[in-house]
Image 1 (cartoon, rainbow, N blue to C red):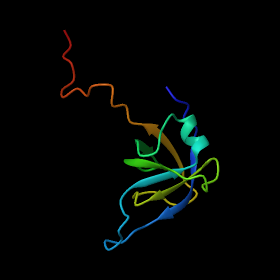
Image 2 (tube, rainbow, N blue to C red; image 1 turned 135 degrees about the horizontal axis):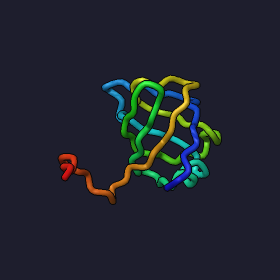
Image 3 (cartoon, rainbow, N blue to C red; image 1 turned 120 degrees about the vertical axis):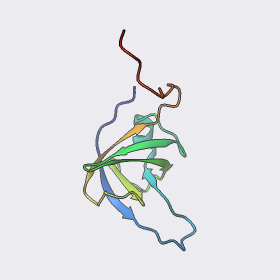
Length: 101
């Protein structure tokens, strides 16, 4: 499993319905992405102080180390601390929990 130290939200982009580029997105630099074993375009869980959401990753080396810029992720604000967890698509999701015997 990748090491997932916390990151600080250093920027927030809120889009409008008329914007061509919109929807959830997390931007971080290549070093932070490599440390978390995520690639450009992969989905991650963004765990914030109030909720968690899915968002794709965009590698952007203009984002400072230790920080992320988020777009259209409700419940986050600049200076808050988040954790990014890579979505594990190799593990099957159980429709119902296993029964105790």
